[in-house]
Length: 414
Ligand code: ADP
Ligand code: MG
Ligand code: ZN
Image (cartoon, rainbow, N blue to C red; front, side):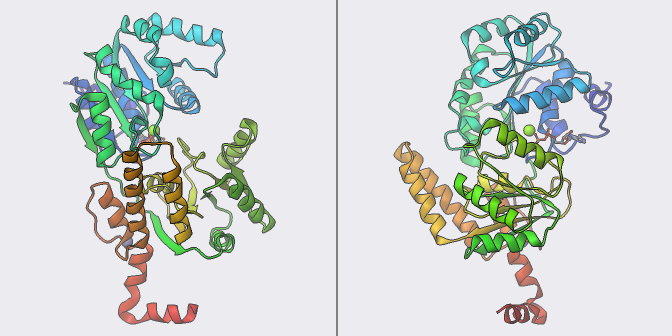
C-alpha cells in the first residue's frame, strides 16, 4: 500500500521524515482510535492531526484556546496550499460568514475554533450535518481542573464524544502529569484512548537554581553572561516585570515588560519586538508565552518560584528550541514558598483542589532542593527515567570534585 501519510508530509509540508511519535499517532487516528498525545513543546504536535486531516478527507475541527494561535496556524496552512479556516471573535461578521460558507460547501479541510464557539448548540448542530472526519483538541490540559491552565470553556468539550460518536478525537498537550493525563482521558474519552507520551528531555537546556538574595543584581549578573542574546525573564507580579525591565534598561540591557495589565497594543508591540529582533529580554508574567515559537531564546530566568513543576517545565521549554545550548536559571528563596502557599490558600477553590495545589508545590520544592541530578528529578516527574545529565548545576558541581577543583572554586568564590 502506498504510504499516503508520508506523501502528504512531503508534498504539503515539505518534510522527509516524521519526528518521533508522529507516525504512531497518525496511524492510530487513521484506524479510527482516539488518541491522547503528550509531547513536549516543539515536538511537532500540529502535524499529528494536520496530516491525517488531509489523508482522510472530510472536515477536521481543531479546538485551540487562543485566537492568535489559530490565526498563525491557518495562515501557515494556507501558505502550504491547504484550505484552512477559522471562525472567531476577532474577525468581522462578513469574514466569518464567508468562512462558514466554505466550511458548509465542503471546501474547508481544517476549521479552527475556540471551545466556546464550537460548543454552542447551533454550531454543533450545523457541524454534525457535515462530513466531520477528525476532531483535534490542542492544549488539552486546559480541560483539567488539576492542570496549570484550567479553562472553564474546555469543560464542555466532554460532550463532543456524544455529539460525534463515530469521529476519532485527538487531544494534544505538552504538560500532563499522571493525574492530569487521567483527567483528560476521563473527560474526553471516558478513559478509552490510546495514549502516547513522548520524550520530555531537552538536553540542551542547562538547569540551575541559585539561592535568592538580591534578585536584581543576580539577574543582571546572569544577563551579562548572555549579552546580545534573546531571553525571557519570568516574574511573579506585574509591578515587578516593570521594575525589572526598567532596571535592566538603566543598565544597558534592551528589556521590555509584558503582562496582562498592559493595553493590548502595548503588549503586542513588545511581543513583536521580542519576536522580530534579537537580543531583546522579555520581562514577563506567565501571561507571556503560550504558543511562542522563537527558536533562538538563549535562556529563561525565573526571578520567582513558578506555580508548579509543570509550569516550570513549560516555561523553560521556550529556551533553546533551535537545539543550541541554552539555560534555565531560577532564583529560589523561602519567601517565595510562603507567597505561593498563601496564593493557594486564598484561591476560590475546593479544599481538595487546594490540597492538590499544595502537593504540586511540594513537588516543585523537592526539585529546587534536591542534590540529585535535576533533570532526573524533572523527567522522573513526567514518568521518564534518565541518566545523570551532566548539564545541571548539581551534576556540574559534582563532576570536578575528583581532582579537587570544585573545592578550589568554592574557596576562590568566597
Ligand atoms: P508543538 O505544537 O508540539 O509545540 P509544532 O506543531 O508547533 O510543535 O511544531 C514545531 C515545529 O516543528 C514547527 O516549525 C514544525 O513545522 C516543525 N515540524 C513538525 N514536524 C516536523 C517534521 N516531521 N519534520 C521537520 N519539522 C517538523
Ligand atoms: Mg502546539
Ligand atoms: Zn544533571
